[in-house]
Length: 145
Image (cartoon, rainbow, N blue to C red):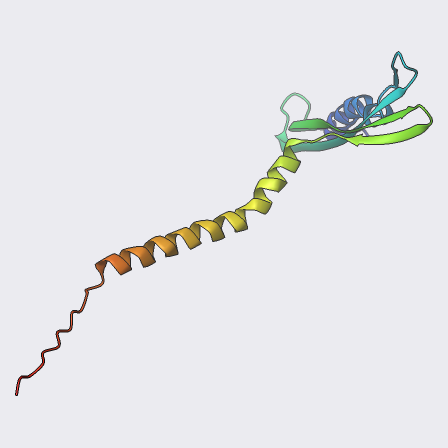
């Protein structure tokens, strides 16, 4: 039985992704500094892949095989996460501050910010009500006998 055309699409895309993503992508090449320390970059690698196709009616040229249309694609994302520093008798892991950590900080601040804004609006409303509240003046008259 002959291979289906989608097999070729999938194997080509997966082979290209395999070439891009290997252990050297995640744990990068070591760099030696003048003081003898070694710095090793650590990255996060994410990848995705999709393939699909459709068969149409029989081909008029080759009546044995149906016509086929298909496509495939893939993507790779590499994000630096940390640097491993080895030297001077110690090992340190230095994390990289990424935009996602900044986004997490902003999300964590949202509830407190809403509470502060709400408290300010309540304060302004109370001040407005105090200004608009009618003042009652009560007069006391002494009756003369």
